[in-house]
Length: 300
Image 1: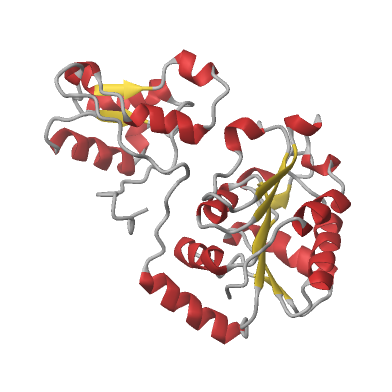
Image 2: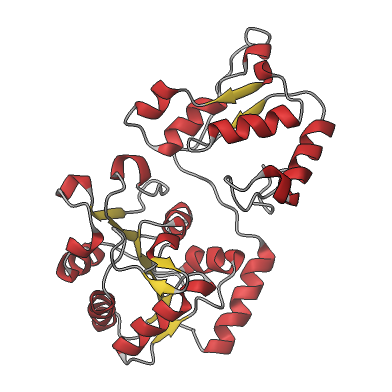
């Protein structure tokens, strides 16, 4: 987000639960908030509202300068994007009635910008790996499907390795000139290698240790398509107009389905609409059939 033209400064908190006195990042955020000119503070978080109120108290932000989600908003069956868009046109109490309400013209989906430097970096990376043709992205992991370096097959977002291998084999049968890039964080590389080993195909590349965020964005910006569990990279790909199939477990699709530009298909499989609360109850044939409905992109 630091490269986005609508973003000013980015201050990252590693954990919302870490005690304040042990976390220098929280100290820096409090100092920055205390030193900034008076203005509205929007808190776009639903899980740790009490902790964030305490952080704002430390920074001396008056209560009427803050805007949080209320319980009624969080109880409504509305997508996160729509909730945030609604919040953006509201004002904290201190400014209520002081300016004319002019709802901005929001797009219907998140807008991500891939900087030119990331495109140059991606071109070099692809050349080094010989990835000259179409690429299908696979995102099999989620931060909750691993713990302390071990696979968590009991988690509702877990899909067995053999299912991923069967799906990838079908993709490459349909697109024999393509390559499959297994995406994930460095901590997920063991899972990606296990899937690649099961595939036994040189066209399958496990790249969890080679995809920093900007490179992943640039890759999603040009990929043929993506198959992913419900995860952050699935949202990135959809926002960058990558046709996608997303596997859902217990998370509600009405809240978390990735948003894409008009005309770009995002097909969800599993979840509440299918009466499923675990990804491992989805058969590979369903995912393969869903992927084959995607037009994909000719861009490489």
